[in-house]
Each structure stands twice: as C-alpha cells, then as structure tokens.
Amino acid sequence: MKLVKWGILSFVLFVNCHSQFGSAKDLLGLLNWEDTPKILSFFPASDTIDVNPETNISVLFSHPMSIQSCVSAFSMEPQVRGAFETNDLSLKFFPKSELPSGGYIIKVTKQCEAKNGKDLDRVYTIPFRVGEKEIPESPELESFIVFTGTESECLAGGNSTDLKLGDVGSVCSGIPGPPTLLIRFTKPMNQKEVELGLRIEPSLSYRLEWENPSQFKILPDSILLPETRYHILFPKGIHAYDGAELKETIQRNFLVGPDLSDPEVIGFGLESQNCGLGTQEIGSVTGARWDSNFCFWSRGLPILSPNFYQFRGGDDGTGISGSTLACADVNTDNFRIFFNQYMDTTSVIGASRLSKISPPSTNIRLSTWVWANCQTTYPFGCRELTYSYAESEASCNGTLFGNIATGGDFNISASASSPNFYPYYEFRLEPEAKSISGKRMKVGFVIQVEAK
Image (cartoon, rainbow, N blue to C red; front, side, top):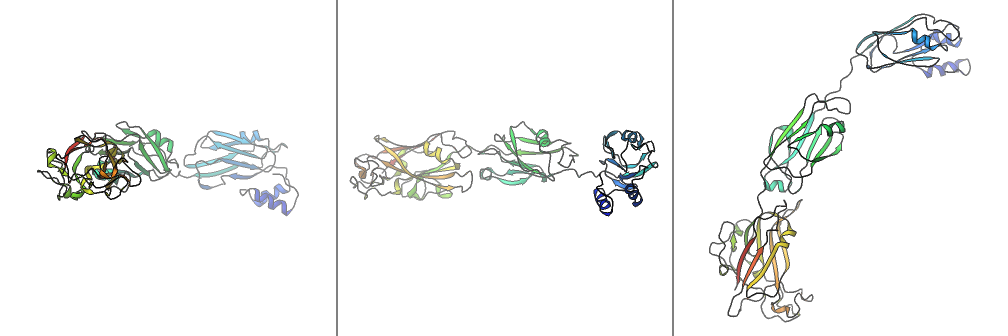
C-alpha cells in the first residue's frame, strides 16, 4: 500500500484496504512513519475461534521488511508443514493440508527486521482455534423407478414403480423398445464417478442420460431378458458435488416378468356378422353364414371345410363400366380378423392374402381396410382388422378394374345368383405378421370359405 498524501483522507483509504489492522496507536505510528517496524494485522486475528480448517495465515507489516528474516522468525505450534508467499510488506503461509481442529499459536520473533535494519518492535504471539470441519451429509438414493405390469400393461408402457420401496417382480422387459430405469439421488452427484461406479448384473450394454445433477436415466441398448433377476449397484465411496460420499454400497434388484406370448389369430368372420372383440368374436363349432350372429371361427375350435363358412359376394351383378350402382361397398364380403395382442399394422397388411381357388380368379386386390381396438398411446398397434376386397370379375369394373371414376369395386363378384358352382376362396395371413413387440407369428393362419 502506498499512501498518496498525509491526512485524514489517507487514513480512511488505508482502513478501507484491510479490515484486520491493529490498534489506532499502530496506525498512527505508521502515519508518523516511526523507525521501529510493527505488525499491523494478523489473519486469523488473535483469539479467533471456529477458524476454517482450510484457512491460510497472513501477516501485514508497517515497514518494508527483509522478508526472509521474517520467514525465519515465523513459527506455528503445533508445527504445520506448508509454503510461504511473500513481498516486502506481507507474509502469507499456506498449510499443506487442512488444519485439524484444536488450538494453534502463531509466533513472530524480533529476529524479523526491516530493511532499515530495525528489529520488530516486540515478539508477537497470536493464538486461535480451528473448529470442527463441517462434514456434508452423505447422499442417499431418493428413488429408483422401474415399470411393471401384466403383458398388456407393459405393452401400454407399464406402471411406474419405486424400487426403493422394496423388491419388485414383473418388471417390463421393455418391449417394444428398450426400457427406461429412472434414478434420483438426494443431492447433486459427481457424474463421472457415478458412471464409472455403476454396475449392472447380468452384464448389460447401456448409456446414461442426465436430466439434472441429481437425476438420470439408465437406457439399455436392448430389451431385458425375461424371467431374469437384475442387480443394480452403486459402490461405497461415490461422491456428491459437495464432497460427501456414499457411506454404504447401494444395491437394488428386480425380476423381469415372463416373455410375451406369441401373436396369433383368435377369431375370423365377417363384418355383417357384427363380430367384435369380446364374446362376439366367438365362432361356431358347426360353421356360420354371412347373416349369423357369431363369427366363422374362434381360437380353440377346429377349422372346418370351406362349405361350412359361407359369405356372400357384395357385387350385385348389374353394374356396367363406369357405373356407381354396383360398386357400393357391401359388408357381407368384408372379412374381419382378431388378434390376441396389439399388432404392427403395416406388417399385418403386408402379410394378408385372399385368392379364389375354385375356379382361380384373375385378380383380387385389397381395396380398403379399417383397424379397430387400437391403442391411442405409444406403441399404438391394433387388435381388430376389417378387409374390403375388390375382384376383377365384379360387374361394375368392366374392363376398368379400379376405375378412379367409380372408386373401384370394393366387393367380391356376385354370388347371390351364382351359376352351377359356388366358388371357394382362401384367406391367408403369413407368419411375417408381427405384434408391436416385434414378435412374429409362429405359424400363419389359413382358412377357406365358400361364396353363396
């Protein structure tokens, strides 16, 4: 500190520069520029208690000093190893490590002398006490969220369940996509240590996505193995941002539920039969007509020969090329199929086939389709599908099958006034049809029906 001029102003400036000066007598001595050097300030001040264990020691002199003599004159009891930082007017001592709690005495002897050769005016002895270091509270696991449920609940996303509350079974495997495990600690964590310390058994490839310093997601790269118990471990010693560490290893485990069932057809009939999921999709052991109140077939029944399943081709046989009269859709030849679980709609449509087998048809196309019994949330999927087919022999098509002016014919050719034979058709759903879980049907579904 260099004083610009004498007087009250300079005194005020000096006081504002440091709040730990000595007595007014010391200050006046400095202002009068006495020959005898003095210590103006100690930090920590004499008799201070609860000093921070990470504190440094500083001394401010009134005169430019032969500072190495002051370093030699400086001592501390109990002895503490450290390093000095000096200039002509100050000395700072930086302990090598935190000071244990307890009493300390700083001493600077008269061996410390000014550049003018004068010794320090007296021996300075400064006692102070270091307080107990405040130990931050150990972090704890606040919540560990997994998703549980039955097969249908898991396919719809599952139920949020806190694993911290106890052992949990029937955890969703993640179908149709890898699951999410959500973990939250009671305080911000050292992210690097958490990532390096986390252990999952059986071994699982995953990544972590931090939502904030206290919360993150474990995102596996694949679905969890069904009927397998997984163990999640955070080892003792992982630190929070404030330096606190886990006092005990945190371990949680959960059991993944059974594998999802294979997708399969559970019912088949006509739109005109008012078939629907529930009791109405039930088929008859003796077969059924297009005007029955039950389906052709349902799971658990044998598939009968074609003549037991009779439908009526919706075309009325009166249409001419470009006419809309015979092209209106009729539901007596709109086939309807039901599944045991939510299906991937694209794969089902691609795997559906209808053909005439007696006599062979030249061309049958799937004109429209309508899904029902669908999920409105991810991963979506549906369990009921109604097909509308158009056949090139249908009367309103003439030579323009799929005529854009009429919208095409969404019916199969007329059968109400069939000639001497009644044609057989075969509906086939190939095994490529899969559920929203990604599982394919083990076997295809095939049924033959007769147009009457």
